[in-house]
Length: 473
Image 1: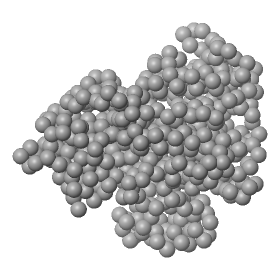
Image 2: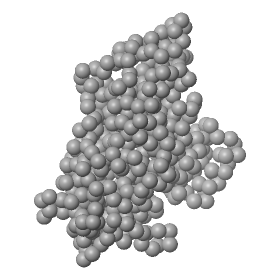
Image 3: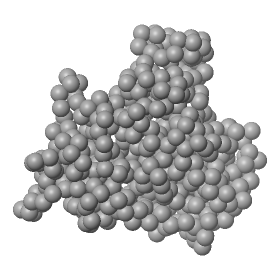
Image 4: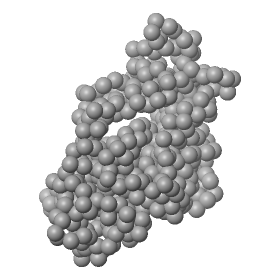
């Protein structure tokens, strides 16, 4: 069933929902209560012009995404709105999950209590692409984290966690840029009770200071980037500028006497905290040799003179197979029931699970464990018989390299396409900033949207973009 808002006399304002759960409207086309004012305000707007103004605003500000200088970051002008009740639950769940993942990382390189207790197989950890044996037994300064979880809403209306990202999640500067551009041009006033995400920079600054080795009262902090080839290079510069920190590359750093030092503007000084935003986070390359990250950071971390945010080795928590055990982590480490549920994820390394999954592979989504940007994903219901046979053979040959998830029919949101409102699939990336004991969640996060009709991959690399996200307090 589909629904329509407004009347056909104003084509730009017509909005027909599709088969998926729609964030703004019910199946009969009526706006949900917290969207009524926005949809009414858009009814008479020139949506094509609105979209052009928002994009022009972003271009003028230099907001870009993608390596090699990137391309303009695309933002749809129709914001997503989360009610106070829903946000309260999401905020608690995102913070809870991030705290559990932080404890898991410490446990992985320490006692591995979760394995000894029989709640998780050791193979799930040791076969993870970003597991770092060189971090075993390393006691690090108080770790700080920036977590960005990917949440999706299915046909039942419940938001679930599709993936966990605490290795190098991007988006905080982009969500603030989206807020500024949309606020400047949207012909609808924002609610007075709308939550403000701009405190994200203050929270990040405090987290970086708190991560410093215990005897450092006034820590020296740098933002480490690998340069313009990084897809989030623009964000690296924005964060460094907003926090008043040096933005440095590996050529500006050197290790001496178990301490990391940096040269900035001819001045050399010790570094106490690195906010690492590099694509390279591994300590060993494919041949087992030390990477430049290991050459620069590992010894100071081992000596306890340097803290890295997010910590070295934390990529193990982003692994798509590890995702299958996060609800268990919440119960084990926090002794709490998970507030947010995961999208059901199947451990194909377990023979019984694998046999069951392969018997219905046409119903599932199959992903490479270390894949990024939607690459390598096979969506069973949308795949050809030949593709399904090929992926089934690949899974059977190397089951530890793949996971399977239940298909979620991503919710849709009104999006400006060729001057009209059309439903496009969205997810939500909220951000939690803090440490194992406490994590603060940035109000709203970044809604990501797939601009191509029917596409469920929202990544910018596949014609995706962002939306401002309002939280109504």
